[in-house]
Length: 53
Image 1 (cartoon, helix red, strand yellow):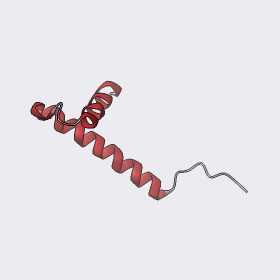
Image 2: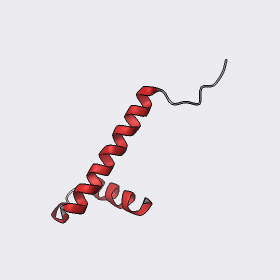
Image 3: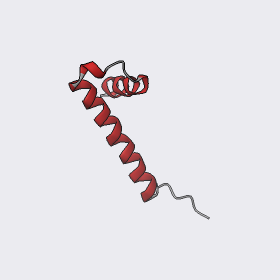
Image 4: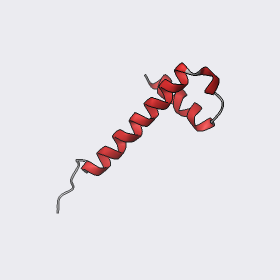
């Protein structure tokens, strides 16, 4: 029995989708400062993306 280190295509698509969503949320908050503080998870994502770049 061997261990497959490659992620499955389904998992890869899910991870890509999550990353695209986080990037879109971050870009939205960059352009719409009136939305900052409305949703704490969106603020956390925005800060995480900004500080990891």
